[in-house]
Length: 322
Image (cartoon, one colour):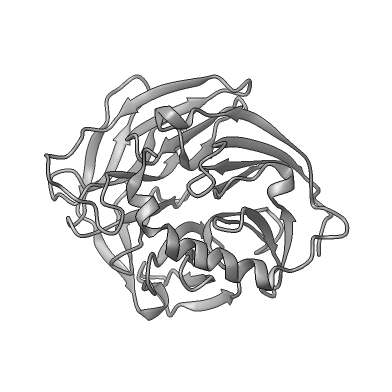
């Protein structure tokens, strides 16, 4: 199979999947997500395994293909158009944990500018990259060669970017226009415990929220008035294999991608959670969720199933709870 780095660590993830299946909560009796539908079935042989996504105003999405180094647009009919391919590192370079170059989180500003994170095991390429409409990708903030930037979030008020580092257990803060990345938050709650730690990330309710894949937790880190990081608080536990996530627009309610068990969970304000989508809905190791209005998109990378990487869409019932 093509992506051997993930296969070498799959035993760790499969163990997490077994644990997840043993403690899986029941499906919601009144599903908050309805009519899950495949927008696109992607090409595994061409490396079209979506790691992250951001919705477009016209109903399409932009995705990152993790190990083919590509940023692509998938229109609302499922057609795929590659927007950019990131440069390959020099021979012999090895990305921490994953070995191969890894393209992670992507965010979009109102003017159409995209930012995304790229890890290569080299100081020359690892960091935050920018792609303007019709332009070519350029690195706007360097990160250490031993970093593994995974999730990326943008503060809509200030344009400030936050990157979750799965290996160094760090949230990096990057100025809106690019520049020097600073270690904004660190600590044991962000650290890995055998594979990958801090993973997905979002800015919401005057805080930066971060998932930890190994620990199955969702964290809330307040943004202090001076811009610094407050103390991290665990907002939810038991989310085995949590990857990226998205807020639904109802308080602190979250839809979270549980990668290894091929599930999406609805996480309530009190931290409890219910499975709302699973394999029977077409999930294949979901990596990220995006919400715009009452529409939801889920990216499925099929890292473990190696069968059907895809992009699913569903409708969100605003009055749903669990």
